Amino acid sequence: MAKLKVLIVDDDPDIRRLVEMVLGREGFLATSVESAQEAYKKIAASKPDLIVLDLQLPDEDGFTVCKKLRMDPSTTHIPILMLTVQSVDSYKIAGLELGADDYVIKPFNQGELAARIKAILRRTRAKEEVQPTINDGALSIHLDKHTVETSGKAVDLSPKEFDLLVCLMKSKGNVMTREALCESVWGHEYYQNTRTVDVHVGRLRKKLGKTGEKIETIERIGYRYAFDKA
Image 1 (cartoon, rainbow, N blue to C red):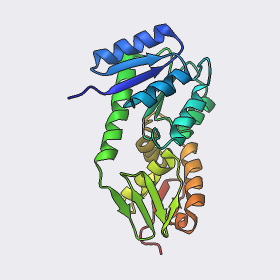
Image 2 (image 1 turned 60 degrees about the vertical axis):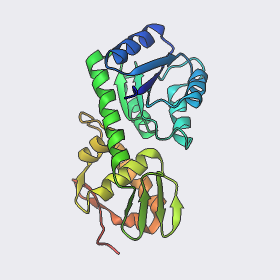
Image 3 (image 1 turned 45 degrees about the vertical axis):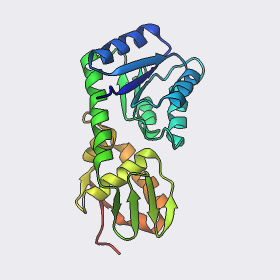
């Protein structure tokens, strides 16, 4: 079985060596680069299974790199773990809303970093193994193509908006708490600020138009996708 490939993007050589060592010990094939431009070239040559991304790079910040990767159809599916010294909540929220799958602060626990990466990859593989299409008549999600259609028209969603919609539809009309949605989509069991869920739901409703009304708010609890609503 081929080893899963992880690309480390960090301008600190000591961090690169440490993360390579940690991941190599866990059976991953880890390579590293020190700048955004080197990362783009490496990704174009060979798509990694996951990217560990620092925010402070010499040529572009990690937020810009994340945004570009999420906007490119050829890289939008690649999981990203942000690894940075920035511990302010606003940075965490910005990274997650741009599409990062997790956010780890330096200095980090080696075992925890490896566990976080494994958890992200488990979620990614689980998404790839589900049925190719989910629909309720008005809305169709094509999981293999990562596309959404409502009333026959394509809807352009960000990766996290897409994942959130899939999670709501897979709940089969049951209510999902904000905490459960946050954990399922962002993978943050400890993450207490669920404001990002509300922000993404608002964007989803707007983009889905009339169909967006089927995403119902359950006061003080969370949301549900109303399959029974015309």
